[in-house]
Length: 363
Image (cartoon, rainbow, N blue to C red; front, side, top):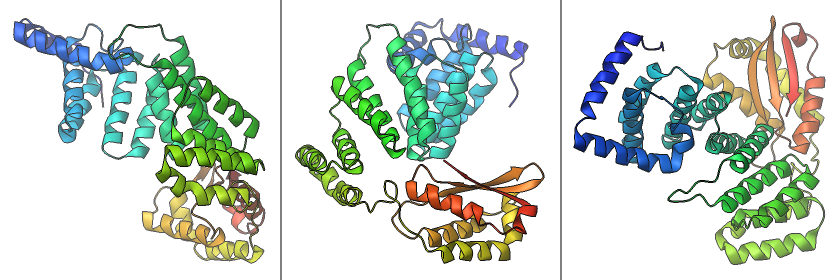
């Protein structure tokens, strides 16, 4: 999408200024702007300065989103892109496009747009917090952790504001620390995770998920009595969450969870994967150059599931190019069993495949 020429920009702004000279229209716009600034002021305020037509379109878009009229909001937000000139404009446009994608249930596009907004370096914690939550959902723990840390910095550095409703800063900080702790736990950085949990408690975090993270941490570090005590607290706070997570915590205690304890895999499964891959190398190459289908990708994933046929969690994978070679990357997502066995899988790739392929095991 190309930017707007200045002649058209001036024309649209003159039209908007004339409309806002009408008292009712001006009052209605001021009320809407006030309402949305209460939640998003730190990204709305610096965006589209001296461009009243763009601001009108932005506020109309947010009104449509708030009312659940998402197709109309999408069309209006798409048209707002051509108004963007500054980093602040693009930061707002990318952020609200991410919000809209989330409302439409599209996490992957939302992740992209939040990431683009973050690249504009806005001073708005919610950009980084939403980015962190999307990355967390996708089990991209290192990226999520970095985004949580940035969100913390933004919250702590933001000037105190008298706003209605006021943001409960302690509750917000406690929640972010709790989420960061969960990322660190998934990355098996136990000491750092425990520190973040204490920080969450210091800020008065009352989320039942906090007790579950504590219980899992204690289970992963061999502190069974403390794990049981935290699960008892969780049962009192949230019986449904306790019932849904009790088996998983028990697996961690008994070292049957592949993330925290090494599981064995028959080596013949590794050979079977490469035998299949060699037979279907042509189809795999089309995936690497970006011409493959979802059906082909599903077949590769099915083969991965045959190797790691225990538990619900599976490794990730992606295709691409590595110079003149095709590339296949396996993602362990900090799962201990995946980390060890994916390295072994890469090491056992047949030599004849390496003439056209690069294989990697990464977090």
